[in-house]
Image (spheres, rainbow, N blue to C red):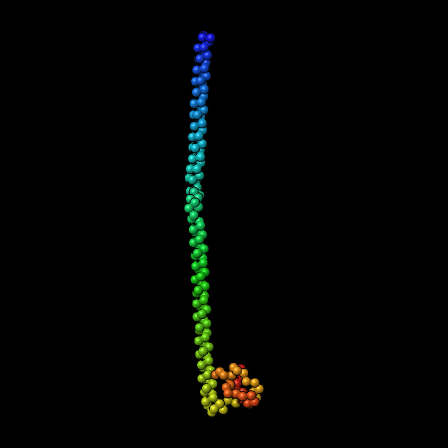
Amino acid sequence: MAASSPLLLRSLLRNSSITALSTRCTHQHNSIIRIERQLFHTTRYTQQSTFSPLRERLRELRRNGTPEIVFGGVVLAVVGIDYYLQQRNDQQRSKMIRQFEEEVKQDEEVSRKEERELINNNGGAAMKPKFQCVVRVVPQQFDGHKCLTNLKVGDVVNVLQEGV
């Protein structure tokens, strides 16, 4: 056994050194594969970024929220423009209404002056009556500048002008 023990020891040493070498080779192989994978992913990433810088820029913009900010800005601009246009339309409409009211007032004043002149010339005798009417009902609205005042039921009135 003593003779066989050095042989056995040699074989054991060989096996252990082979095992150690095998383990070392496996570790080196794994590290080489890891490095290759890293290089492959890195080159693929850099190739994509060199081939499409626009795509990379868009990714970066998406990450920091730029599209949402731009969309919000566009919506605010559209709402602001719409508000401005509505205000301008309202101002134009109110200006047109004021002009129309002024024209109506001026027309009323001109017609009142003409009627006063007709009535003042010979006490209204210059106008010939179209027909005569008997008042049957006196409405409460007969108190304006063109309506009959101090009128009683049964009074006879001369109609000088219709549709006034």
